Image 1: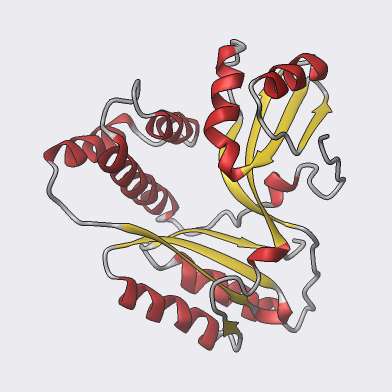
Image 2: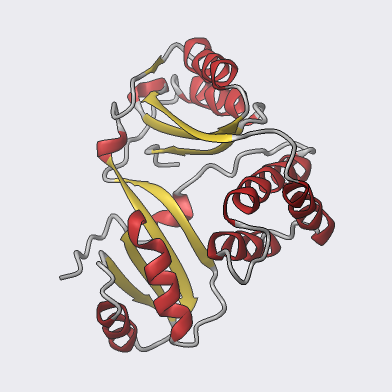
Length: 244
């Protein structure tokens, strides 16, 4: 049975820090999408019809207004077959004010990236942990948000497709479906089979099970922590449990 939790509600809106707030925000966004599209196309094929992960990523890039030429260039690079060998990697630890943070990166040099991410913790007087340090305090979720008003029909279709649904929320004509991250493709397929094509949110995220507030004294350090991570080209996403 779906687990309803008020904490999950709209958590995806608070989910990730809008990473860059500087003038090169778009360039960073394009470069992050470019790298992720390249890696996804290289791993699963460059045809979006046969690579659901790539198709979802391209849709997401378009929603974020990434120009077509950025997307095409990344796919062309993957078609070329050569190029860098990026691997996904994840770091976690306790950030300023005792907050919890998970950092996802795509890197061609894990040693360098670990060193750089560790510096973000060190310079903000906080502590990087080993894998699993804080991940158990987050739900690793597939999240879909789309316009729809029949919660029961959607839930029924998902359960018929054997999707292990965590929660379905209905608010003002929009449904939000939460499922374990491992159910992403199954859930996405079931929803598109229902004829749902327009997704406002369609991604896998870490959602904190509880939030923390940071004191005014710790806030500058927290902002510094995010700024250092934001400056790193390898870092793709930063998730934390700070209530902003």
